[in-house]
Image (cartoon, rainbow, N blue to C red; front, side):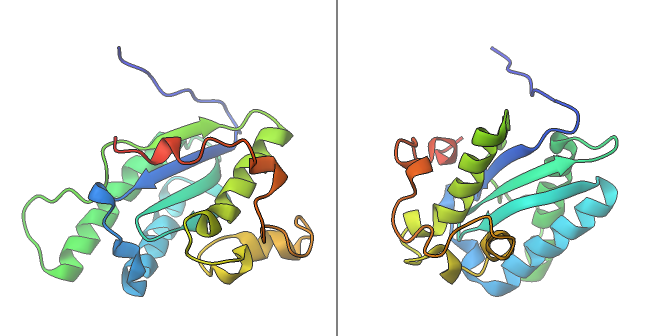
Length: 176
């Protein structure tokens, strides 16, 4: 069965992209900086609003709202090969190389509850993976931005948030 992507104008989209074989490449700050640079460049070509994000060592989650004629597939299909090309140049590899798992996982945000749950998921993810004890300790997410906007109370995420108590953790991060 060929499942097609579902596009909704002005929708916020939750995206998960995983590195091939879950290689923890983004432990290296230079590769994380490259990812940020490529995302910025893609944003110029395919405009979108970055609503939320978290970059972990072997995958990332985004909450984005494409604008204008952009859609999330165009964004991802620009991001992945451009990152891979620049990464290969950095490490001196020529020829083909698979950097990302095939495809990516997407979810159209349906309502405010769905939005908050996915934003919480993004911000709690480093805690869930045992990388930090508190969301504010992880430097590679939008948590501090949202905390400054009073979207989270003090000590949020120091234990499992109620919004995620029954969450089926990481179904989108399995090998694709």
